[in-house]
Length: 238
Image 1: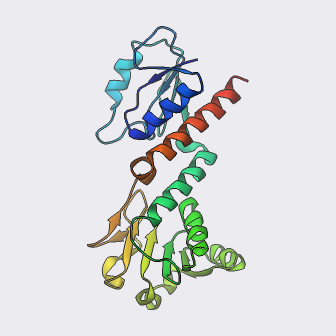
Image 2 (image 1 turned 180 degrees about the vertical axis):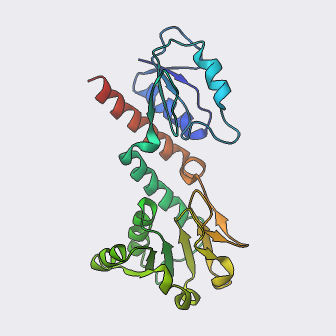
């Protein structure tokens, strides 16, 4: 196995280091024997590689290389998109949740917290914050989700029930990638952290924190990419 490192983020640099520690050849030279191309996750991002650059790179590599990245699909090549692999997504959400809790100097013990959405990040946040003693309320769209959360011991409400409750929260985490709240609906001293790919809390004073693992925990994020690459590579070539 010979891995061409095409990514440039700090996380992917840690990935390369881990792969090298495993005895895998990692190169930045377009050698004839390269078997895999490792891109950033996501592969195309502001300030990173663009599709035209990837096309130029692939022209100098063997035609049967395997491409690894995120939001990645290239005609004529075998691609593995980590952002479609559920174990990776759940582990990445766990890192995101831990990073999100460190964005404020909040003492979580007894703190009333609202989490908007109960996807991967919301699930991890609810558990971590509850373990820290926070008084967690989850807001969800579907009544069946609310009932499931209540059965698990959480306080849960539908979005329509939120308006009269908003005054009491000291921190709000949004995980829903569509408009949900305006910041002015929340107390002035409430920490407002938006973790969604598209803003769900509008207004001023919102911490929009996309891509937390890569920026706040690059070593942990890089290890996750490396572990996932090695696991899937072994499954493909047992």
